[in-house]
Image (cartoon, rainbow, N blue to C red; front, side, top):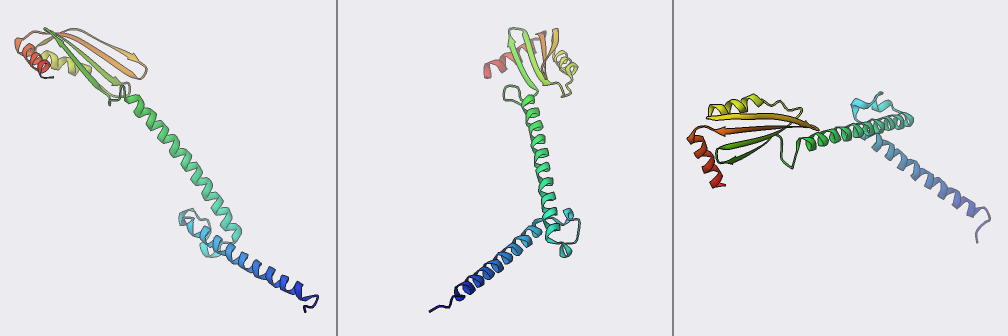
Length: 169
């Protein structure tokens, strides 16, 4: 037979034991939390931190990480949009397209607005190789610059070169 206070005593011991395990578990969790906060983010020494200090610094660190994640997301978004803008039809800019028919040569150059491009150098190369530039123009559309050069091959050598390139492709 049980005495009438024996049931309460067992229940009281169980509660004390459960509370003891809860406190031990919480102490372990506080220690883990304290160990993952980097030393350069701490404002007080690790060995003198109270539980409240530990929670405050963990909260501060989590806020810092969230801000950093947001900044990195923004930077990635800017970089990916910049890369997308620099990618016209799936190719990196500048894009050079050359069309040759008979003695006529049409060159289309597509470059980004923020990319420095030496338009006059292309014209100089054409003239040095024996082509006469008939018309050169450019237009800006969005963030791309379209350069168009119409020229005529003066020398037979240049004409033969483009004919051989045309037949090989």
